[in-house]
Amino acid sequence: MTEKKIRVLVAKPGLDGHDRGAKVVARALRDAGMEVIYTGLRQTPEMIAEAALQEDVDVVGLSILSGAHMALTPRLLELLKINGQSHVKIFIGGIIPDEDLHRLKEMGVTGVYGPGASTEDIIRDVRLAVAG
Amino acid sequence: MTYSQAVLNGDRLALTRLLTQVENDMPDGRAALIELFPHTGKAHLIGVTGSPGTGKSSLVNQLALYYRKTENKRVAIVAVDPSSPFTGGAVLGDRVRMRDLAGDTGVFIRSMATRGSLGGLAQSTANMVQVFDAAGFDVIIIETVGAGQSEVDVARLAHTTLVVEAPGLGDDIQAIKAGILEIADILVVNKADRPGVENTEKALKSMLELAHPAARIFQHHGSSMRIAAPAQESSSKLTWIPPIQRTVSTEGKGIVELTQAIARHVAHLTQSGDWAVRERARLEVELDALIREELVSRFRRDVPQKQYENMLEKIIQREMSPGEAVKLLMNGRLK
Image (tube, rainbow over all chains, first blue to last red; front, side, top):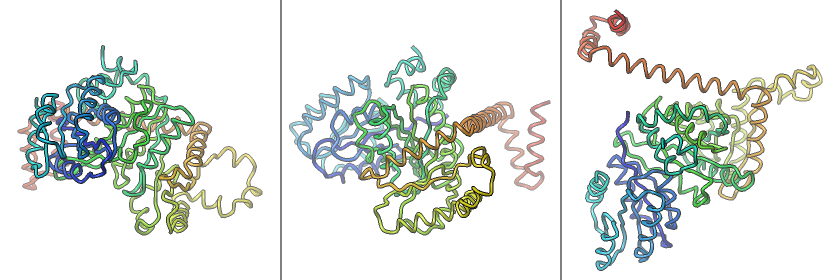
């Protein structure tokens, strides 16, 4: 029997094409021993929810630099719920104004990481979130 | 309701959960595999393998699109990527090239890491394929990086194996080294819009002639053979000569021709009886693997770890050979 690996979907919703942050995080999580499924650019919440279902992931990491986080995040949470995957944790990286932090956390987002965030913090938080 | 019932009813959440159970070899997964087995054996399994960077994922994307749109078949994809040998982690990026399939519920893509297990990878892939087969997917595409023996084993699961090459990726010796040409039912030269495509094709052709001596005679003396040999020779022998197909998967070029070649291969398998032969070989390998696994776990259960370590110590001290130790350990268990 193999030890259950943490599976993370790293997705880039919306229309901006800056995926460097997403790739850095994907790589950091891989180096922490996790299995990271990377979807690439310009994903809709529907595509992300479908990928999360097919891959049976524990966590979804969203990289959003377009300012559309307050539209994309609730939609994704709703779709995950419809699919029976409300146990899946979400974290967000990108440019998120301070005033939105509280509301995102209220929705159930486990972590929000801006420029300069440490990958060690992200890894620790992902592990904690999966452990429940 | 059990996993297997839910999967048979088309429950996608149950399907994805069961795939995880099966991949991790959990008790629920094992139980479900037993229940699902009678429902397997209907899907066409296509293996796609080749060196990194030959465009396998894009090709799989195009094939799946074709089977969805033109033949309205349900398609499952098992995309295997390597785990890091140091951290055990993996970045599975095949979905990036399969964007066109997103949002179609008739396609189910599952990424899988090799997890460093040698024989285990083929086994867990086989089990995941069985789940998809039972769930009613018509075509199951298994994509692996053709870099080592375990990938070759995975490709052997398939009824039809495509080996993908691309121009300008190292010299033709690479293909022999990898040892994957022999398993090819169809050779695909992808990225065929690139310079050097003729050379790649030529190299593959000459390599094929080495791997299939019968094919060489046939090709070199094709017309004279047909005159000399009795007519039944060609119809009864039914040797399959792997065709070489050119594709440009980013533009969808050559895909229809490739699917026609795949269809011809399926027809060949059925007419020649090779389909049954392959099924038999595949299931035999699976049975053998399971027996081996069970015997090893019985052995570990019955022989105390201490005894095993004592033997190992004696072997290290050159007081006993590994062969003698095995005899002693096994007989000790049988007494």
